[in-house]
Image (cartoon, rainbow, N blue to C red; front, side, top):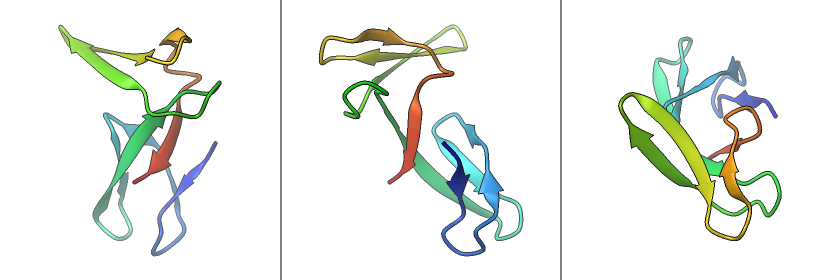
Length: 71
């Protein structure tokens, strides 16, 4: 899933819950969603690691599978 800037439509990479557009110098907040049920994931942060947990029965979700959507 690709994320694009709403203003200039440049492709963005998600990092720590936001996507930064260098062209517009804007941060776009992102929401992590489960790839199975598409509901928001609980973000677990500890010792520099970030994990994602689905509270709707799908358990821990790999960062590679998380769907990030602009909020």
